[in-house]
Length: 333
View 1: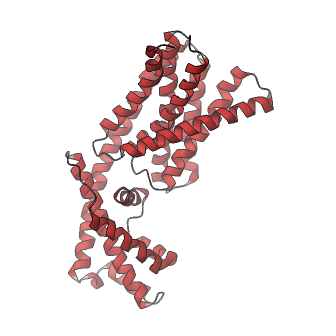
View 2: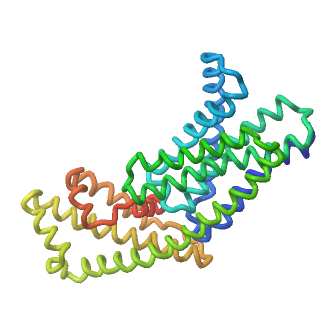
View 3: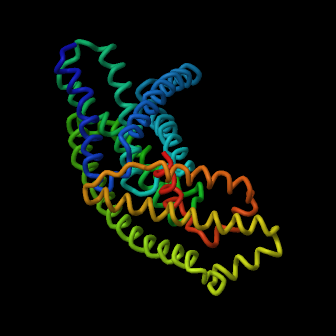
């Protein structure tokens, strides 16, 4: 095992991940989050190694057919579960962060897999590590990134239906399986991955950059109007005021007052989050101040006071898409 073999086997996927982070002009994903998904990908790789071994022993399937059909299914399912959990926790807002986090999970998986191969075959030729570093590793990251991007796009269309994840999963498994077949040669498959994946991810970034800009423009104006309406004292004459008035028959007076306070805090924090994104896009890094954290503490208190039923009643007045919930997490983290 030479230092060059180690570098070729491990460095390409990390360099690709770093390039994705640099392309993110809004800095939607924090470095510590990327490190977290890298570690998660490593843990998933170890779990996949055990599961694949157990399935091979239980089914007595030949190794080669299993690597072409069984392993892609198991490994993409495990990697995909990490992305689904992140999405359900509102940690993914746009296609950019879906691509970065998806690739990060796959990169962590690939690092452990290639370290395992380096240990098993320390005397393998440099060409082997070129294929594993530029082909297999990038394929793992790219397949999970594609799953994440397609899944998030489907969530926007289907309002969070679990079925939206199926097409991306099918594409990820198919890509993984095709690569493992080596229909032409390992080097040809590696070149195919290198040619196909970067344009696909670049397209996702371009589309997401436009979506972020449009969302910021519409959302900033809507939040500013809502906050101005609340602070002006003219809320009662607006549709929001009339909706709040209708809640008086369903909730006690103090709860309705807490609902109004919650609406104001939510809108202030949403404006703050969008302002931070605009500043980041223009090269300014902004720290989250103590006052903002205090507002989150107040929101937590109000949520407990309002209760689940009250929060559901608030949804028609608030932006509650996965993107809007993500922006609050970004501030709170």
